[in-house]
Amino acid sequence: MNYIVFDLEWNQSPYGQSGEHPRMPFEIIEIGAVKLNDDLEITDEYVSLIRPKLYKRLHRSIKPMLNYDEEDLKNGKPFKEACKEFLDWCGEDYVFCTWGASDLFYLQSNMDFYYMEKLEFPLKYYNIQQIYADLFDEEGKISKLEKACGELEIPEVEPFHSAVNDARYTARVLARIRPDDLEERYTFDIYRHPKKKEEEIVAKHAGVLEKISSEYDSKQIAMEDKDLLVIKCAKCGRRCARKIKWYQSGSNTSVAVGRCIYHGYMLSRIKLKSAGGSDDNVFALKRTEKVDKKTVEEVRNRQVELREKRKQKRHEMSKRKKENREEK
Image 1 (cartoon, rainbow, N blue to C red):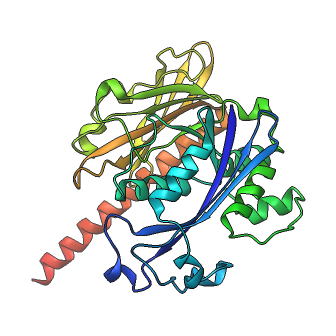
Image 2: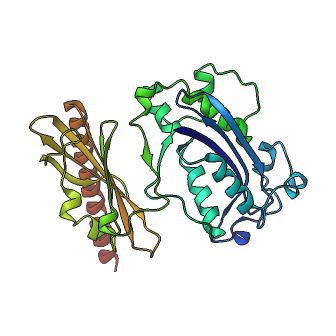
Image 3: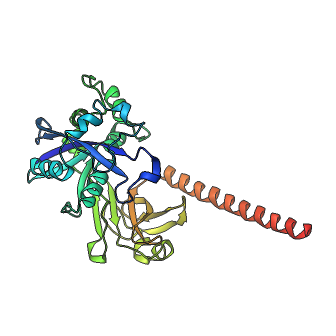
C-alpha cells in the first residue's frame, strides 16, 4: 500500500462574500503530492497548477503566500483534468495523508462543483497534524506545519505554502512516526456522512471507540436517541454503568462518563454536526476512551461549574424581569 501525502492551495473571492459562489467558496489553484511506500520513503511526486474558473484574481491575503501569480495560473490545467490526473497517479492501493482535515474537505467540495465521481465511502485517512499533536505535544495541542518541522529539526530547504513543498514537509513529519504508532491512528473523513442507519460507522482504533451516526431531524431528537446515549467500553465493547450523566459542555458537544467492570472509567463525547439537508438536520460524532479517576473528577467539576453558571444566569434573568415589572 502507498501513502499519498497531498496538500492544496486554494483561493477565495477577492470581493468578500458578495462575490462568493455558494457551492464553491474556496477554489483549488494547486495540487501537490508525494507518494510513499510501506517504509515511508518518497517514491514519486505530483504537482499541478490549476486555471481558476470562478476567482481569477487572487485574494489579498493569499497572494503574498504564493510563489506564483494570476498570470501563472492562466497557464494551469482545468480542475477536472488536473484532479483526474492526480487520482489516476494515486493508483489503486493507497491511503490519503494530510496536515489537518481541510484539504480533503475542499478537494471533495471542488469535485462536487464539477459533478465528478465521488471518493469512496467511508473514507479513512491519516490526519498527520492530529497524530503529531497526540504523539509529540504533551498537551495535545495542534501545531502549524512550520512549527512541527522546527520542533523535529527538519531542515527548511524549500519555502512553505507551495503545495508540493508542504506535502514533502508533511511526509518528513510522517517519516518520524513509528509504523506501530501510525497504524491505528486513522480517522474517517466526514465530508460525506451516513444517511441511513445501516451506513453508520462504528470502529475501535487507537484506544478509541468511534461512532458516526446517520441523520437526525434535530439536535433534540439526536440527544433523545437511547442507542446513541449508551456508553460502551472502548476496550471490550460492553455496556458501561453510567457514572456521570450526559451534560452539555458546549453549544454542540455533550459529555458523560461510564464505568466498565473490567476496564474502568470511559469518557464519552458526542459532537453534533450539521447534516446540510436543512437548518435542523444533524449527525453525531461519538468518541469513547478510557480515562483515569483524575479526569473523571475534572469532568464532574466541569459539570458542577456549568450547572452553577446556568443557575446564576437564570437568577439574573429572573431578577431583571422583576425589576422591569416594578419599573412599569
